[in-house]
Length: 148
Image 1 (tube, rainbow, N blue to C red):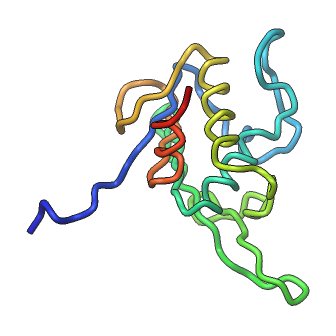
Image 2 (image 1 turned 180 degrees about the vertical axis):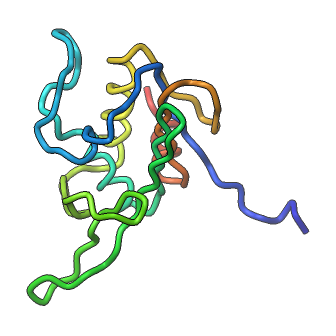
């Protein structure tokens, strides 16, 4: 019986730098070093919205703190939007942020962030590194499988 249950695919983007929650709440907040991939302070938010929109889930664990992301569908002027939440509280953007982004772009963003901080990505859930962005589901795992 148990061998017929679907296996949840997982990716862990990791590094040894503590992630301040402001990094996923405030647009335009970036302190990347010269020569880093990131500079605008928007990519992590775009990636979270894209991952949730794709049907995968995302959790950030940093310095022992867990930040679980989901969204709540609400009406705004007669249209439905997915208001992104972290641990049940609104973070100020919807799943429509970066609505032209595709899953590979979210993967690239998270990998670049990890690389900027001396980390990487593994296709397993892992403990240990100071900061881990854990993506569960099929969509980003498929991107990882077919990366070049």
